[in-house]
Amino acid sequence: MLDLIAQVQIQDRSSGDASCVADNGFCPSWIVDNLNRYTDPLLQHVYLTIVSLAIGFAISFGLALIAHRRRWLVAPITQITGVLYTLPSIAVFFLLLPITGRGNTTAIIALVAYSLLIIFRNIIAGLDNVPAETKDAGRGMGLTDRQLLWRVELPLALPEILAGLRIAATTTVGLATLAFFAGAGGLGERIFEDIVFKSNVVTAGALAVLLAAAFDVVILIVQRAVTPWARARAS
Amino acid sequence: MTTTYAFLGEFGDALQFIFQGETTREGAEVGGSQFLDLTWEHLKLSGVSMAIACAISIPLGLWLGHIRRGSFLAISLSNVGRAVPSLALIAFFVAYLGTGFANLTLSLVLLAIPPILTNTYVSVTQVERDTVDAARGMGMTGAEIVRKVELPLALPLIFGGIRISAVNVIATATIAPLAGINTLGDPIINVSGYGDTGRLAAAICVAALAIFTELTLGAVQRAVTPAGLKLEPDTASRRMRIRFGREATT
Image 1 (cartoon, rainbow over the protein chains, first blue to last red):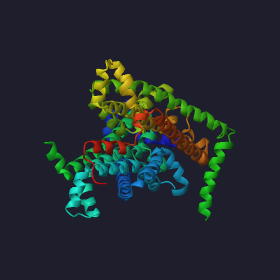
Image 2: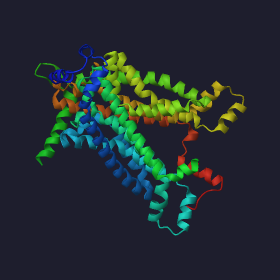
Image 3: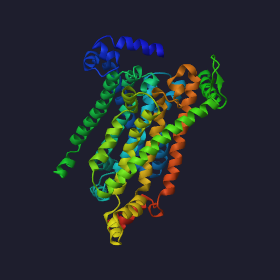
Image 4: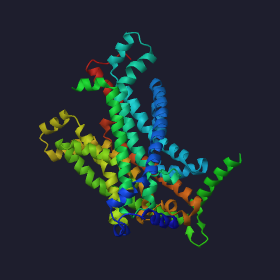
C-alpha cells in the first residue's frame, strides 16, 4: 500500500508549482492543471449515487405501498431497514466482500441498504399526512382504493417523498466516498491516495460536497415542477 | 455448494480471529486480546468526541430553541453536515492540522454536532406555546422553564439526535487510522499486518459495536421519555381529532 501511495505521489505531482506541491500545500495552479484527474472518479461517484438511489427508491416505494395497505408491516419494516441503516457502510463493504466480491455490486448493495430507511419512512409519513377529508372526498367521488392511491394520496405525499429522496441523495454521495474500499472507485479513492496533500484533499472533498448540493438542487427543482399546487398555495 | 462453504468458512475464520487471534509471520500478535485494545481506543475516541459534541450542542440548541431564534443556523447546519463526507472532513484535518488524537477528535466533534443541535432546537421549538405560557403564568423564570418544562419534553428527540451522531461517529472512527489513531479500523486501513481475515473480523466488530450503541441509546431514550409522552403518537393525534370533532369514519 505504501508503495502504491508513493507511486501515486510521483505521478500526481508531475506538474504545477514545484515548491508548493512539494510542501503538500494548497496550489491553485496544480489544481487547474490536474483537474482532469478527478473526472473519472467524479463520474464513478455520480454513477454509484444514481444507481443506488434508483434501486433504493424502487425497493422502498414497493415496501411502502405494501405497508400502506397492511399497517402492521410498518413496524417490522422500519426495524429491519433500521438495522441496515445502523450498520456502518464501511463494515458492510467488507462483510459483503466474501459474498459478492470487489466492485460496484458490493458498493451499491451497501449504499442501497443504507438509503431504504430514509426513503421508506418519508413515503409512509407523506401518505399518513394526507388529510382524511381529502380521502373521503375522493371515495365519495367513487374512486377505488387503487385510484385513490395514485390520483390523490401519492400526489399529495410527493413533497415528503421527494424530501426523503433529497436526504437519501446527500447521504449517499457522502457514503460513496468510502465505496473505494469495496473496489468501486469514486472521489474517496483520490482523497485516500494522497491524504496529506492539501490541494488533492480540498479538490476531491469540494467536488463531493458540490455533487451532494447538485443532487439536492436537482431534486428540489423536480419537486417544484411536479407539485405546482404547493407553490400556488404559498403565493 | 463449495462457494457457500467457502464463504461460511471465511466468516468462521474471522470469528476465530476475533476470539483467539493469530500470530503473523513477523511474530506480532493480532486479533484476540489485541482487538480489545483496538475496541477500547475506538470507544475512547468516540466517547470523548460525543461528550464534547453534546456539551456544545445541547446547551446551544436549548438556548436557541428557548428564544426561538436561529432556525436558519440550526436547520441548515444539519443539511450542510450531511453533505460533507466524513472521509473528506478527516482528510481535511489531516492535511491542514496533521494527525493525532486531538485533531481527530475535533473532526469527529464537528461531525457529531449537527444532528444533536438540530434535534435539540427542533424539539424545544415544538414544545407547545400554551405549555410554556402556563409555566410562565405559574411564575417560572426563563431558566426554570428550560430546565423543568422544555428540556424534559425535548429529551426523547435530543436522544434521537445523540443516537444518530453516536452511530455515525462509531462508523467514522473506523477510518481513524488515517489520522494515526489505531481503532478497530486498523485492520481495514493497514491490511498488510492482518490479512483479509483480520479485515473481515474488524468489519464484524465495527458492525456489532454500532448495533450495540444503537440499541443501548434506544433503551436510554425510552427510559428518559417522560411518562406523559409515552402515549402512542397515533393515539394522541387521534384524541385531538376526536376532541375537535374532526375524526374521520374509521
